[in-house]
Image (cartoon, helix red, strand yellow):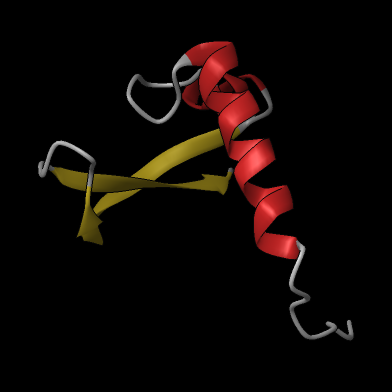
Length: 69
């Protein structure tokens, strides 16, 4: 897959999308329904990893990994 270089307006579009997501379900400040979505489709939680960044409140962020199985 070929990817184009970022354009000046790309970040503005990302901000719009992230704001809409946050306003719809307060993500990322509360857990989304992603875990249930993955389990319902046959994915299993395999492990967690500490992210290389922190949340807006300074607390660590945990990334959850899933595998089909």
